[in-house]
Length: 81
Image (cartoon, rainbow, N blue to C red; front, top):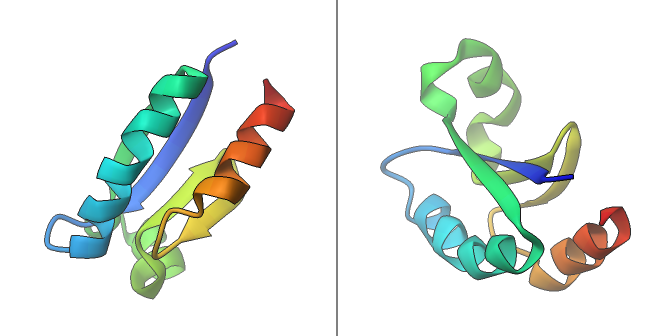
């Protein structure tokens, strides 16, 4: 079963870029696929996450926002493997 993560991001956000880069090795380790969604391209996402980006999700579960919480994300991913 492939793990699917979603990163809610925006193009001009340095924190978003930083989380994307920091997430890559962890995603590779767990064989996770990361879909990046532009918060500004979807009014529903913008209404929900505008000031919280970047936000890392697994389904509806928020794993972290602003910065990658590697320890928490690793623990979560280990539990769903």
